[in-house]
Length: 391
Image 1: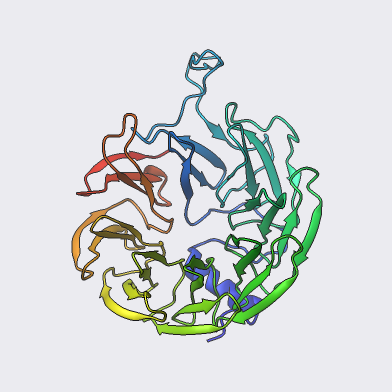
Image 2: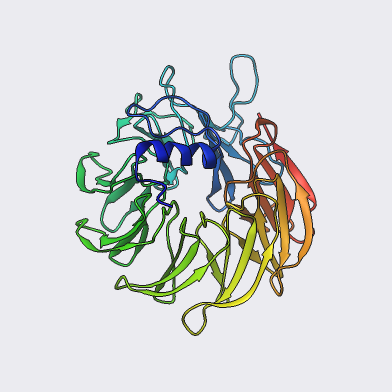
């Protein structure tokens, strides 16, 4: 089925998958995001969560927002004597809308892209945009995570309506643009001097990371909203064709594996085994050690879609589902060790927090669109709930 042949069809896809995320209008409007973007920043593993109108940094030890401090390390207070927290909402009246992860420029600055066609330079110490208060104008609405290529001094931006754009992060001038037939919802992957990205127009693009010159494109037979994975000189990617692909760096399909349903997320590979989930709730383990796919196991795990990239650690494969559950599976055979419920659909990729400082054991953090449980942390080993964050 061609799900992106027309704007009307694409809107149907958006409603079905994003559960309210509307990205097909010509002018970006304020709307509810369908899942938070989350990840970690710095050696202290501060957790960022970008959702709807704000970006917040969270203490991984207890799930509370980080407190802003002055140069002497003292907590900064507001006029009422309350501690100021690390929270960025954009300039007053900007109605900024955040879907994507921030770009860490250095230990003092983040770049935060808004769906409302603005980019903010945010201080890591101040949680404020001290320059260009109204934001830097972008060439279109951004859902995908921007990627900064420091070697080429370029910031890559996938535009949700269509095209991939490269701008210079000093004067923000557009350097080049790759035209696509439909939206780019995934961040690009940079490998050496090449850049790879997927589009809802069914294609995987390979281009020169400096000039934007297209080297090749490949039809993935269905929309692809996530980037490929690079492993041992090959690319691995899924699509809405209900397939996983192994692809050479020359753009040749080396092998295909048929899945039961659409594949949204990027797979992961650990010890020569590829793990991926599909939107029907099935998880796959495929041996790629000799080239091609050899099935190790597949397991129908969840009653609804698995949108997350599997997290593989120790004996576990951990996935989240739209059925409001997080699953710990066996790497050996795909059987379920245990299941932990959360307050909403799990559509964001799972974050691993390593031991260190006040964190005594590894934790996994998941995100949901439920304001009462935007983040939930569990111990890695037995899935005990450690904390939750809401607002």
